[in-house]
Image 1 (cartoon, helix red, strand yellow):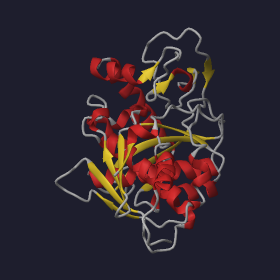
Image 2 (cartoon, rainbow, N blue to C red):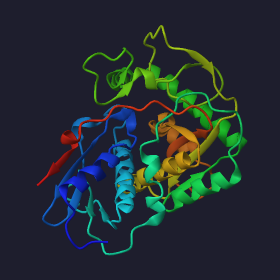
Image 3 (cartoon, rainbow, N blue to C red):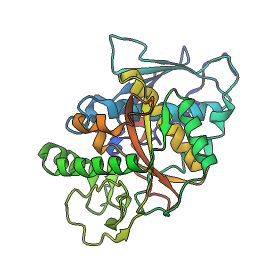
Length: 329
């Protein structure tokens, strides 16, 4: 606990953890500005990094920035800080997504602080997982993580899992027919081997994982039909562990909360020895998204489809230099 503004070096450490968060196509659509005189860190949407074809409403952008905000809160709690967060604090400035007052007087959130070691270990894994159920106690803990951030995590039953997998396949077919989506994916997913000047954003080829020989895992193929002759093939799980993350409402503030919930679930899963990948494909098409929810549940709007299990850890994706994302004034 502190009443003094946090020093610049500490802020740099907090933001370095924040930007380890996942983002759609690893576009990293965030900017931070620290007002050192008043101890306030602002989170902005970087509108130069939108995905107009894949994410026209910027729902994914808000979720990505929400995930970064959760990481920031975890890092702050581990540093014995108790930040006070305001979402969308200025209605006239929609790109200002959050203000974080780092000098809060409440006790640090110990539950968040315990997740700090998982921040650097969490990576999306697009490899085959073991074909086995997740223990009930772990599932319950993941659901609690989502609830703590004002969202809901649901592990659907067999018929619903099959329905979601069908929606993923249908979304893949729609993507093939949409040149704008294909070109956007090709821009951010680098199928070519890295060169001397490797990009600091997007998804590198080594993070694609193997191409699917057999199985029903909803793993997005970022090669998008481009040839990768050295890419291995593998059999994925036949009965993947699928979870749906959702919220009651569906506006920008709900997307920010969903992003925080998503990252809290992913960090909790990492701490529990699980690996994960996410897919938003059926949620990127309005005609498919509504069908993803379970009509028998209280979840109003599905925000993300998660695949969880035991398997190889994923490859880390690059991150932009801190100077590109943080201003201290």
